[in-house]
Image 1 (spheres, chains in turn yellow, brown):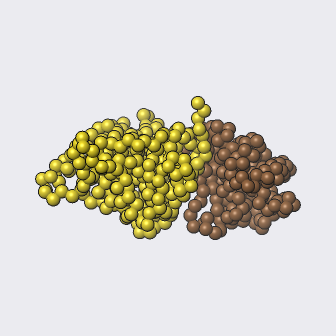
Image 2: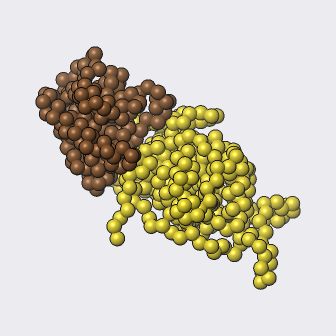
Image 3: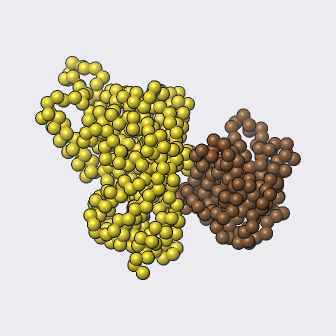
Length: 357
Length: 184
């Protein structure tokens, strides 16, 4: 069979993937730099698969529509950008507690506040460490190419239903706006089957299904917490994804996720031209996080430089992973500014190479 | 082969679509491509630019500061990106509106009077295709046929009667580039 190759914008590729994965519904509210997702779905989805696409009155409405439709066992998705995702946090916490599958997409822009429409990674803490209230985790995928914007939609729904857990695709404005070649997977038929836990009416053969996040008894609530924590441990055992390139002989390793990892790839090329052995380690899942893999890598390398489009968020996890074995330095750009390959190289030279000579 | 190109000009000059045509052409030739627009405040008036990368191998950073080729369609873009050309690289600029020409001596410089040619062809919008023709003459990163196929993808179908005019513009650009430009 011929491969289906297209040149697509990240946002449009993600929307196309949502249609093809057999998504039942999308609820969203427009915000730059991700409005193309809603626009594309509005134009294409219903006629092709019967997928429901609804522009809600707000992000808060969107996430609660997701809560309801996910409770009915449907494949549902929403997307927004930073300020909009902040508005959704209450609902996300409810969905995580209720253990409902869904795919959420944050095309991150520079913050805090209303901020800028330029790319950023300033929402790492919000996404990975909580965001909403209570002890819950999202499974977090961080694409670095337009191809992964497609692949992670498919993977996201698989993981969401496997673990009955919300999945967040954490990407940024640049990946949303840029065009690259993508290979699309064939259309998956929407299914009318629903999981046994879905609240779609009670047949005589079983007890009533109840979805709630309210448990007045502390003991009961603790039980639910313990169950969630056990699930998160299992996810940590099974679902870690990362990409290590040029790390086997690297003296210094750049640790970065998403778009920035690709900028670091360029830096690694430039560094090797100068005879500095640099590798790139890219966590693909931000939860579960590849702590052990980074720790092992710290036995071989002399130093890590974490590069992010924020003031230093993932670097805390890198330092936890490395546990003081080697120095972990940080380079960050904020508010929509993207680091350049050259300045990353310069930082390696200043922080590491200079000291060793 | 990896060719890292930035195209810069005013909004409305066809800067973004020119990059897209290149990238569609690259996809047709089964190359790796990356197209990154400036989508910030500048696209809401004023200058616009896009980075187009065409490569035989996987592309690393889609965001760059140094380029093999710079295509500048106006004076502010020329001023901004002249120094972003890698030594030995190529600078193509729209010459009919430029008051302060480039001064570097370590790169190949190709002035193209695309605006004048476009007005001779009675369609100012083919300016970008003339510039693209000039690029493909100097650096055949994709074939003319692929560029035309790329154009068919970028141009809305209701304008497909303009394909032959655009092809003519491409050829004009190639002809102009052949005449000018002294290698570094």
